[in-house]
Length: 243
Image (cartoon, rainbow, N blue to C red):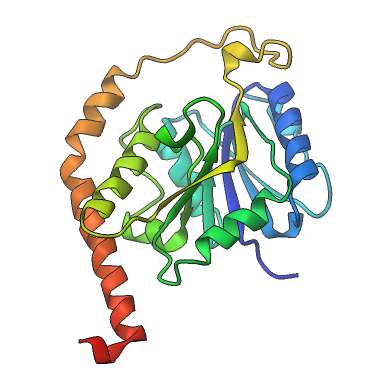
C-alpha cells in the first residue's frame, strides 16, 4: 500500500459527538479510504478526545497531542506531520455529503500538472464566496512556506487563502476551483446542538485576526507572484520552443 494522497488536517477539542458524525460521513462517502490520512490535533488536557479511534483499518489516523495553541500554529503542526500530495483544512463541525468526493477532487487537480491550484466544495452556507474547507497542493504549501501563516489566532485563514488565489487570477492564472456539487457541509457549533456534547462553545472575536489579515496583504502578493513564476517555469519546460 502506498502513501496517502490527501491529508486531512483536523483540530478538535472536546467534540467527540461531532467527530463521530464527521468520521462516519467520511467512511460513507470516500471512494478509497487508502487515499486518506487524518492528522488529528488534540489538546493535551482533552482526555476524552484522546480516545477517538479510526473507524476502520483502511483509514490512517495520526494523533498529535500537544498543548493548546492558535489555529495558525495548529494547522502548521498538522501540515508538518502530513504526507499527502493534497492538503485539506477542516473543522470537526463539518460532514462530507457527496459520494466519491475524493475522486472528484483529484480529477479537478489533474487539470493542473504544475500543481498550482486550490479546490473547495460547497459548504451549503457561503457557497463559492468562501473556501471554508480548502484543499491545496503540497507545492502551493511549499511556496507559501507552510499551509497558512502562524500569525492567525483563530479566524481568517480561509479568507487569506481565497485572497491569495484572487491575486493569482489578477496576474493571469485562475486556479481557484469551486466544486458546487461536492458538499462539505459546515454544521456550525450553534446549529449542531443535537450532536455537539460541548455546550460551552463561545465564538471567538475575529477583530485581531482581521487586522492580521490586512497586515499580510503584501505577503500574499509576493506569494501570488511566486506561484505565477512557478506556472510560467513549468510551461517553459513543457514547451521550450515557446521561449
